[in-house]
Length: 429
Ligand SMILES: *Cc1c(COP(=O)(O)O)cnc(C)c1O
Image (cartoon, rainbow, N blue to C red; front, top):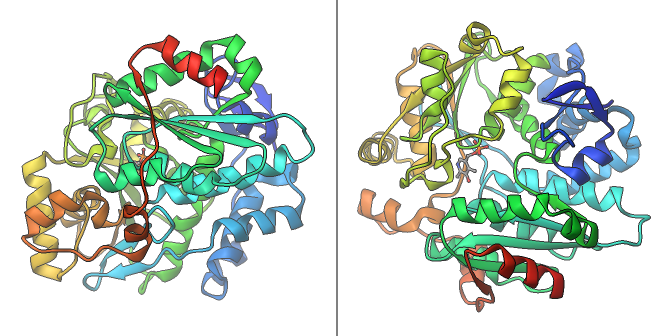
C-alpha cells in the first residue's frame, strides 16, 4: 500500500515516509492510494470481535504490507487500550464516548497510534526525531501523553499563553523528559504559523528531523476509522439507517468516518457539526469553499477557519460537490445555542456533554427519530470545566486521571511570537 499526495496522485510514498514527513513535498496531504473494503464476514459477525481485533482488521486494509502482521497487532493492542462505549440516551439516540483515554479527548487514539508507528519506523535508526505541534488545547495533551518516554523522539508543543484551560495547560506542561512545552505570547494561529515556518526552514529540519503530530499526519487519521466500526458493533437495531454527527474543526475525525463508509461501513450520512466557524457547512450549501480567520468560541477545539483536512474530503470525492453533499450534511450553533443544547441533554437525559459534543447532540435532534443517531462525544466535560459547570449549574466530578496532574508543577519555556526565539530555543535545548 502506498499513499498519494492530495496535490498529485502520482506522487506516492510508503507509510514510513508519509508518517515521518507528515506533508508531501508538494504540500499535499497523504491518503491511501486505494481504500479497500473490509471483509463482508467482519461486518456480519462484528459483535464477535473485540475492539482490538476489529481495529486490526481495519488497520490491515489501510496499511497493507507496510508493517508485518505481528508488529501491527502489537501496535494496535498498545493503542486501543481503552474503550469507546456507545451510551444510549433513548432508543435511537446515542453518544459515542471517545474520551476514555489518558488525556480524555478522542485525540488519544491518533496520538497513541502515531507514537507507536513512529517508534516502529525509526527503531533501527540512530538519529533523533523532533515532533513539533501547535495546540489550541486538546492536541498537545494527547500528543504529550502518547509520546511520553518514546525512545528517539522529542516532542515540542507550542501553546497560546492564557488561552488554554487550566487542566489543558497542566496536561501540556507537567511531563518533563522528552516532552517540552513552549508558551507563546500570542494566539493559536500564531503558534501554528511559527510551527509552519519551522517546517519550511530546511536548515532546522536537517538538524532536528521535524515531524508534525497535527491531523495532517496520516497516522492520526487511520486509528480514527476504528471507532466508527466499534460504534456500529454496539448499535441495538441495525435494521434502521445510521447517521453520525461529528463535532468538527480540522475535519480529521469526519474524514476518518468517510473512509470507514468507503470501506463498507453502512452509514447513511454524516453531519458536520461546527460552531460559528462554519466554512464547511457553508460549502455544503453554496458549493464555494471560502476560508476565513477563525473566531473564538466555547467549543474552542473547533475554532478553525481553514480546516486542514478539507482537501482530503475533496480528494475522496473527486471534488464533486453533489457527491459530497450526499454523504455530509452541515450543521452549526453559536455559543448561546451550544449552552442551550448542553442544558437540554442534561435536563432531558441527565447526560453531561462537553461544548463540542453538545453541538453533535443538537445536530442529532434535527434528524429523523426513526434513524440511529450517534453523536461523537469528543472530550470529557471536565476538560471544559468552567463553561460546563456554569451552564448546568452543577459541580462535576473530576476523574482521577486529571486530579493527579493538577498537583504537578508547570514547566514551560516562554517566548514572544517571534520566529527567531523559537528557532534559537530549538537549536540549543
Ligand atoms: C480536536 C477536537 C475536535 C475537532 O476534531 P477535528 O478532527 O479537528 O475536526 C472536536 N472536539 C474536541 C473536543 C477536540 O479536541
